Length: 343
Image 1 (tube, rainbow, N blue to C red):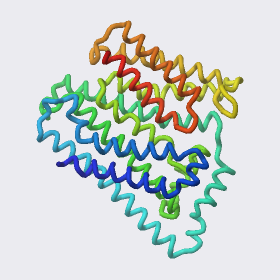
Image 2: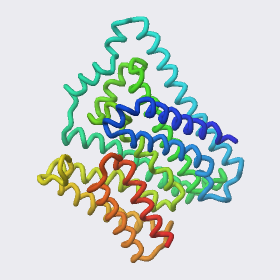
Image 3: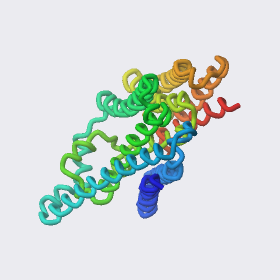
Image 4: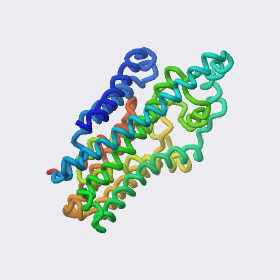
């Protein structure tokens, strides 16, 4: 039952997110973000329900003692992280309520006016945002490689672990820890901005203008990877790299070289559109070839999986309207690849 605390925390965030969204549904519907926020609540719920099965799914021989230790560490990490946030909230809430000037200074509408005046949306700022997404991708591949090295050295065997259980333990703990941290900050930002510490102003200056009254894009992006923890690692890795890498290429090429609008009233360009499609195809081919020992399939199937992922990526880019591509890209391209693999 050591998994219970983590599951409760993730399901609790689902309930909080759903409650906040429904409470503010009128403005959410008007700004076409209601569906996105409902999906974020659903993704938190899925993560909480699936959490007890994540560490041992690819490692059926994992001992109960090792599993309990990993669950306990993850739950402790989440609780400590949330405890630090609660202490910061209480401290900032007390000093803000005692000083009307501080309370007025931390008014969120005032902050948004400052953000709209000083916020920058150009190639440099976009590269910075995409770098953060790519960093999450780097962490995942780094932990997988670290697990391989420790397994080859025989160190994991001494701990009664294997590469999958060890790597996924680190990936899941840090990944969900990141999501918990940002969702906690976002719920405070959107409801009681004065609870956030002063340095958080600089933190949120990197968000996009359309994220001012909703959750930042990184939260659904990471949560959308959850189902693919149960797929072979090459599929999981391909999904992560498509969502971060191909999207980054499409965005940067579109900003720097885009001259032709993809559709009416859209900032996406045809140049970025095709750059994202080509990147998706190359990513799937490269990842499935590089990690072939963990998912031995034919070259024909690899090309078919790459083609399906590319078509789905392009369809999402072309037709998706009110649902974030940070949700649609991993879910649809990932399941497309996975289904072809299972056929």
